[in-house]
Structures are given as C-alpha cells and as structure tokens.
Image (tube, rainbow, N blue to C red):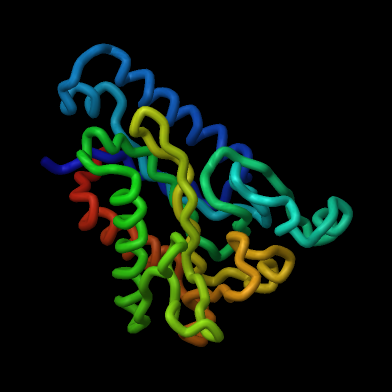
Length: 235
C-alpha cells in the first residue's frame, strides 16, 4: 500500500517559524492516532503525513545529545555572521542550515509505513544517495555515523554532503535531512559538524564546480523520496 503524503515546498523560511509549523503537524498526527482505531487508511485520511522542503536563513542547531563546545562562535560573533542558534529536540550534534541548502522535514507515521526508525533513516539516506548519483557522484554511508558521505572510507577525504537528525514519538517523525546544494560551506568552519573534528563537508555545487538549479534538485529529491517510501502525493 502506498503512503499518502502532502508535499509542501515553503521556499525560504525562518528556522523557528518552520520548527513551530512542523511541530504543529507532528502533534496533530500523533493526536489523530489516539482515536483508538488501528485502520491506517482512517489515520491517513484524518491527518495525512507531510513532507516540508525549505531553505533557512543562516542558523546553527544543536541536537539534544550534542555539546555546545562544538559551536566555535560566541553570541556576538553569531550576530556578526547574521546567524542564529537553537538547541532543539532532534538526535545528533550540531549542524548548519542556510541558503542553498535543501532541508527536508518529513512528518511521517512509521507505524503506517511499517518500518522502524533505523530503516527510516536508511531510506532518507538512500533517497539522497540516489539523487547525487543522478549528477554522476558516488555517495554512501559512514559506518558509525548518519548522513550521506563522499569517500567515507578514506579518512583524509571523507566529507558529508547531507546531514540527518530526527525525532520520533509514537512512531511519528519530525526534523529530517539537510542536503548541501549551493551552500556557503565557510559557515561550517564555525562548528565541528555533527561533532566530527576530523571530517569535512561538501556540496553538490562544490563537487560539480557549478551552481545548481534548486528547483531541479528539489524535484529529484522529491522523486527519490517517492520511490524509497512508495509515496502517493496528495493535495
């Protein structure tokens, strides 16, 4: 059975505003499961899943298990960089969001999809791996770490192109992935990305040597998510 999902491309949006938006959808989806019914069709119809794609202004976010020592700026320096900082309720350590980066927030019910959290993260990674492959780039996973990486087995060359950090409650997910497309990578110099001090970051444009069309990349991401999750897009 395909999974019904509403697709929302909300363009460029403030991080906190978007966080509140997805948290509201997250709560509504959890509450819809409290009706007592186990019929997945009824659950989907009463409050369907949502995929949000967005770009944020410069912001650093720190997961609940992360260390603030991985942010290498103080508040004055953050302001000078025109950046903000939030400690949030997802897994993982610190990461950066900014213009030119596709951030995806799937608010999915894993109980309906019939997968666990580990498989969910695997499928998010798979969608991005397939996307970068369409650009002739071989990406894969890093043992012991989440996200999508280039040359993960070569310590001196390993670099992350997509970070993943999620939250799940009652099998419902929020937060998600951050895929560097035309991202200004210098902003990563101000953190230890995802807590790593010995690995780099990259972007699609950095690897290809040219700025990429964001709408075209978003379409590829959307199509690959559709494949790996067997999604039926609804309005």
